[in-house]
Length: 247
Image (tube, rainbow, N blue to C red; front, side, top):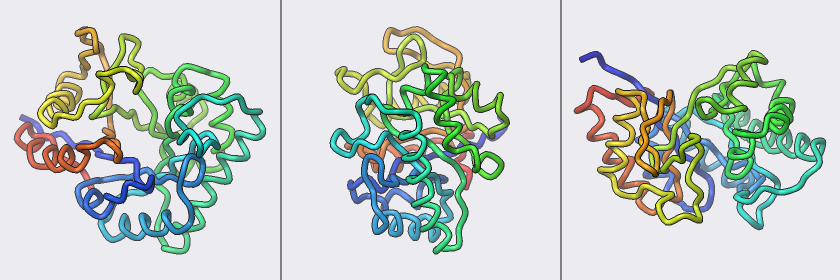
């Protein structure tokens, strides 16, 4: 069987404090940069850890809504959102430049991520905000989403992202966190979920349907209660399926 290689990413710098344990097992990370949480001190700490562990660094901008941790859609003027996203990414870039490393990718957070999956005009707004980075960095975006399509049309480099620790709806959107089965917290379920996506290019939805999906990178949320256990288990077990995490 041919070996397959995936990127394993995690949202970090969000106040959980597990980065020192997580980062050695990851190939990329998404660093909160002030929209939903994060400041220069937290960004600097995580960038240093990423550099030490040879982990690719991504910006994780959000709606400017720390009160709701960026997890609720908000009404915001396009110019204000563009300005906020640029400010967030630039703030991380300042830290990255200080540490003499590079920005690998940009991945939006929370409600902003979910909204640009379906809203074409909002997706274009987001792309306008990060236009100046398009030749240097990837966008992490879901397969068959508006943001992935628009980004590809505009010449951005896209890596399709799937979620190792989340269930999917029949339209390939994520099951809402308000639903009881939104999160996959059992490590064996997560492994089965990832292996199926990698090997069969299929995901089983919350209703038991099998849908086509592509993924270059898989996310485990840093604030999932069993995140450390899940990542450790994936790192150990994926090679048994000829799937390897590529640093």
